[in-house]
Amino acid sequence: MRTLLFTLILPAAISMAQETKPAAAALEPAKSEAETPGPTGSIELGYRAIPNLSGSLLTYRSIVNLGEGPRVLGAEVAFPGGKFYDTFFIRMNNWGGDPYNSARLLAEKHGIYRFTFAYRNTAYFNALPSFANPLGKFNERSFDQKQRFFDADLDLLPGKRLTPFFGVSRQAARGSGVSPIVFDANSYAAATQVDYAYTTGRAGLRLSLERFHVTFEHAEAKFHDDQTLTIDTRNTGNRTTSYLGQILFVGNGKDEYAIEGRNSTTGVHFTAAMTNWLDLSGQFYYTRPSTKVRFSENVTGLFILLDQLRFTTGIQSFTQNELAQPRTSGNAAAELRPFKRLRIIESISTDKLNNNVAVPVTWNYNEQRLEGFLDLTNWLTLRAGHKYTWGESFMPRGQLDQAQGSERAQLRRQSFIGGVVVRPVKNFTINADTEVATGDRAWFRTTLTDFDSLRIRARYQLNAKWMAAGNFVRIHGSNPSWAGNYAYANTAGGVSLHFTPSTRWSALAEYTRGALFSDIQFRDPSTFGALRSLYRDNSHAATFLLDANLHSRLKLTAGGTMLKTAGTRPTSFYQPQGRITVPMRKNCELFGEWRYYGFGELFYAPEAFRTHQITAGIRLMTVPKK
Image 1 (cartoon, helix red, strand yellow):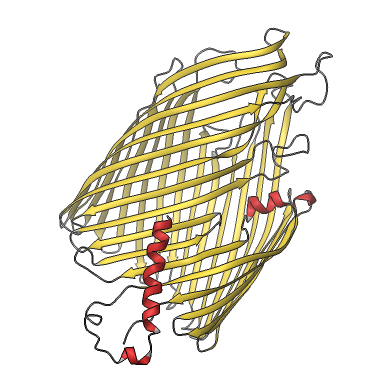
Image 2 (image 1 turned 90 degrees about the vertical axis):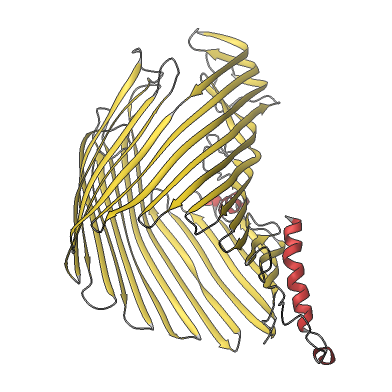
């Protein structure tokens, strides 16, 4: 990536240097410069300072994770068309140490090829002290990883009837963390190393005719996911009492997980305009994954084996398995327009998988949908339909289930769909959609068998200066079960107002109110007693942004975001900000930016943090020659 950064900065610097030639040099003949203009672009360099950071550093890194130091905040360069390309463009953002940076490249020769490359680098850190912390010391499910992603795609003969395409994608992660090693009656926090990668290569062919489009695609993937958990000092685990008079502990030990596999996918999807009143579409995919899993464990210490009712000073084990899980999925749809104002859409989808293990896992999911759209008038559209969802699965039984063989689960649900689009006056649109579902069988305890949902969106462009929008979402549902009822409710509504009185300044204000409720009963595996998990969250979120051009290119941006919640875990978050840009020359601007981050929790006060951040820098750009 250093080469890419050099390639981006150098043309911009050369071009800007050319613009500052002495006046005498400007009188010289232009020669070939006018015929072949140079690259255009800009680069934004800055330095971020954090004068103070008070509170929890772990929480700050888990949520914000911005650090001090020099940064390439943004850069882009576009090269003029040449023999081998019509378009060549590079863009980069947030390089130099920020937790998320990206780069994108586009090269294209019209009718010959189109190539795109995208790269992302993410520093994933998650170590909230209050999560998975039974002893009040540290998070036993923490991560500190570097994740990298890239996608490269090449289309040949774009826009032609036959377009071959190729692509490569890769995502990989390496890092450390903390995970527990679990034994009977105790668990022990262990240092963890993670190494993960998934690489996919794909190729295909697109055929585009006047009324028919079809795409054939094949992809091959390879992946591995390795984890190593290590304990090298005496660790008494999370148990605070003895067990039958003995202190359980791990002296040293290691758990190793190694997963590797391949995946082959073949697919086809098409659209066809059969007549002026009938369109057909569909897609089909067949996937053939295979996976090898190895696990080894070697630990010493003092442990209890509950199935044998005895103590032991060491545990060693090794196991491996191979799994093939072919999967077939597809969907088909038909759109019928028997009259000018009526559209009828029928669709069906299916998803099936199975494996080859001794106790097989099978999954069969299906959905059929029928919808109609009627334009009653120019300002009123009605929508109505029905959706039927059904399926069946067989999975291994839980460890506490003494029955033999697989456990069968079924899914049955009927849904009635409705909607309306109203355009009462010019530039005013209201959309409303609803779904009411009833069912008697579900795969999972957290699957809603009965629910009703409502979504309303409205947008009003009063004039060129004022634009208002609003939205409302409501989902209420439940899943009655022999093990206990599950109730869920989520309601949220918001409004936004955008005011642009002139080209010199604009303002945006948004407010959202939300309420989330979840109530589920479950069984304690050690006592089989009934327990209840109840969660409530009532939130207020607001955003205000002001953009003003004070004089010439002197720009001011101010505003911020706030979030305040009440309920099970009351939380507050504030992020005001301000930025000013001062022009120095036609191709040079100075800028300064201030941000404040404030986070607090009523019941977890040690996780709060507050910090100010100040960024100053310069933006250099090329100026088009007249």
